[in-house]
Image (cartoon, rainbow, N blue to C red; front, side, top):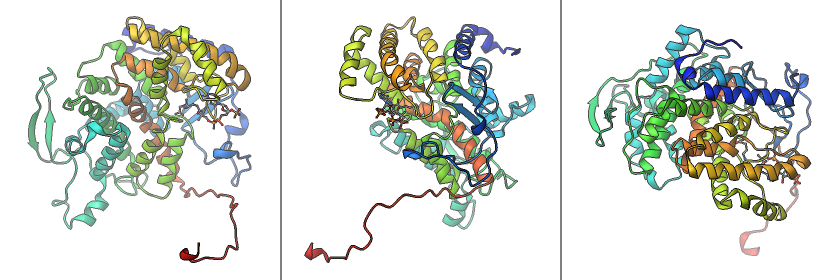
Length: 474
Ligand code: CMC
């Protein structure tokens, strides 16, 4: 692939080299033919074998992304994940997922402008600060934030609530702006602004059956989730949220708004790669949850809220935080063997390993592992975590890898990467959500174009003819 490199990619060519080396290794270990039965249009109703947890069930057709679990492939809209991480950026990948193709230059500029405008959510942030965010699970705060963002475009709500649009409380259109100058003063400047709204009602039906269901809502969510996550992180560490920086990328802004420091090009690039890697992943639990909600013709904000809730669990996105906890508990590479032997004897699951779909090495872990190693070079704590992770990986692959094809998944090395980027442990899963918002919203948009409400069955195994006994006789 011959790619004209922008300055960030030029400055961080070592990162590109690591990704391309991971790509080469992946390609050496697998062949490159797709699975015909999973990559062609199906005639409905479709026949498939379904296991518990809907394993093997085909829920829909998509052009958004493809996961080949046997070979360890991940493809977004025709582009393999290694090339996207090596050459692209999160904004471009979001456009690709939402539109099914790469943008041209003017489309990309316009898309980035829309993303930038959608970061302006001061009133939502102000409302968030009325909740006990310090004491709440950050994913719960993120759900609350998403609900408050929803008011922004839900004209239907407003019409119900108030007879006149002008009287309605629009979340971010007129707001008390919170602004800390970029030079980093520790006090906020509050300024009342009116008519700051950037969004017009979308015109076409595809773009919206309702203002909370169209492309603008997707863009709003993609941007605003990063602002909300950063604000939650800062509030939890007793800091005031920082206004986004107009000259920084999505990845750099996320780190800047969380840490208060403009990241180095390497930090920005690695954050960008992590965002790309987590942006979409087939019919995973949170994507499916968000699509189920969307299929009722509920709106995208409610749907993304469902995705956040599903992602929070330790079997899904919550695993990244658990992995770092586990590595700290193991303590050092030398302890990994004995620690693992005990867990294995107790038949306990090892966080960050295994996957419903991958029966080969997860390509996302292939990319994140060398990036974790690279970042941990100058960080003693992270170096220890990385070496412990490597040592444990060796033990697990030797046993579960050989017996059951269980390998590290995306969550195994991401926590070490985030730690090195200055992201607190309890914000790992919200950062995953920031990234996955592109995938959730893209798949929702695609699905509702040919919507049919999701409604599987359960096999009833209870009784049929039980006579009702009054409570006092039981
Ligand atoms: N450690 C030890 N054994 C495992 C693990 C693991 N991490 N994962 C699966 N197994 C074993 C499991 O015990 C079972 O063995 P047996 O057949 O002898 O009973 C077999 O592999 C199949 O496991 P399963 O739980 O039925 O597999 P699943 O497809 O339902 O679950 C999973 C997939 C990701 C939930 C599971 O592998 C797991 O719990 N992993 C640990 C949590 C984790 O790392 N989650 C992040 C997933 S990747 C990112 C994301 O999607 O969010």
